[in-house]
Image: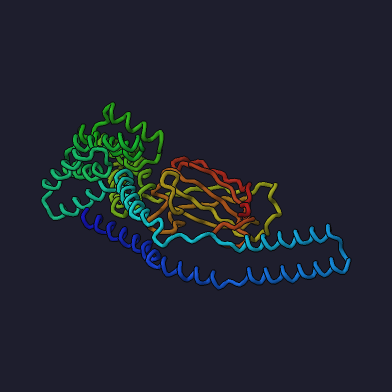
Length: 405
């Protein structure tokens, strides 16, 4: 904290210096302004013009061109204009050079006090103290780190960052009871966010020897009601299903979790878990090739919109995982209606094949440009959640147009 306050003090002194410096030149500026105003000849010129016009009026009166009443009126008008010009040029009296300087220390003190009060209420002083503490604990034994952070949690129990530091340490050490307390403190401060509820369900699940107790089930249901794809909960359910030999369910849960994870290590671990579940089902690491026959037709209402040699792409994506296409095949618009076969030989990469899925989403698109990327004016149709275990041949009807952006 000391360097912070030193920095604030130096910045305050700099701000005061920028205010004081112009005041040091106030006396010289006042003298220069007074000298300039003393040399102003504008009023003298106005008086000379007034006298000249007055003489002209007197001459007109003497020559009988105007009467005495008209002379009095015109003279009064000249005097009024002279007074108005003199009033317009009259400036305000310059204040003394040291006038108002007493406000400077008052304003400076007010700024310093207000800054301190606002920092106490809205500043991140507690977070800064926590950051310095965590940095100082970096090379100390885990037990020492934990004790210091627990003391910090007692000192500032309403700081969620303290509990965020404590939770993973409790969890990784296997102290699930204290890990649950840390997450419950976070929920009290941050609200019942799905991520926090999922973490609480996970630690209570492991604390109960990987059992879906009523408490854990209630947390799981609340989380999935608000975020169906929540990866931590789906991973938990996959573990529970695997340990009770419900391998197909485990694979489904883990695939849902995979769709929400981007960390390479986590993705690899889940993929290995899926492979293990597949082996328990009697599958090997490279599943038997899958194939799906799909009937592709064109809605008569769209006939003639594109040439008969336009390319038709049939794409299959994993309904549960929703990532890159698993298989792609193509034909031409003139060949429709046609039954197309997609299988592992149609895969885009060896890492993602049709055999890895249980359900697929099918998309048939007629491309006017011949490119795989959709363009405005392309025709398309889709069919979701097609089971690969069903022997029937699904039908995809191309009945929509890609709109202009």
